[in-house]
Each structure stands twice: as C-alpha cells, then as structure tokens.
Amino acid sequence: MYRAATRLERKNVIVDSDKIRRLKRILKTSSDSETIRAAVERTLDAEAVIATLERLRKRGTWGKALGT
Image (cartoon, rainbow, N blue to C red; front, side, top):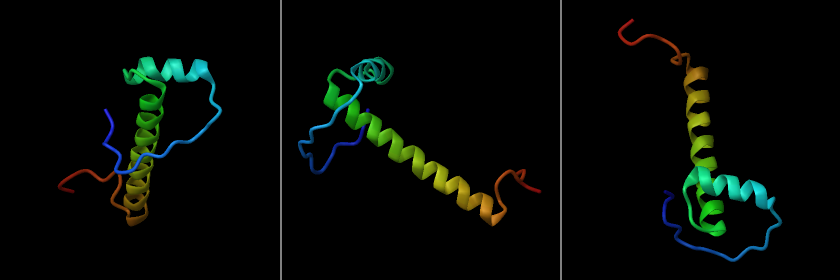
C-alpha cells in the first residue's frame, strides 16, 4: 500500500480516532500506524502530482490536445 520507509521514528500524536478508523477502512490497512503512514505517503504523492500539473499549466502545455 505504501512505500517502505527507510527510517521510522516513534511520534506521539493526538488524532481523531473516528477518522483513523474511517481511513483504515478506506486504505484497507490493519493498524493505526500503518494507516497514518499510508495517509502521509498518499498526501505526499498527491502534492507531487499537483506540483507537476501546476508546472505544466505555467508552461502552457496543460489542457492542449495531443497532436495539435
């Protein structure tokens, strides 16, 4: 589901347990830790996609049909 971390570190965080439970079902993960790691990874991936799309938009190549 998520890329293996090269370095895991214990962190104490306060989270909404209902949201973690919902995410666990959505992400099909088995533990709270796995759920949080997967959610962080997905968020970072989504930010990379957004940054790429923004670069394409600034270059003027976003939304143009191929071959035109």
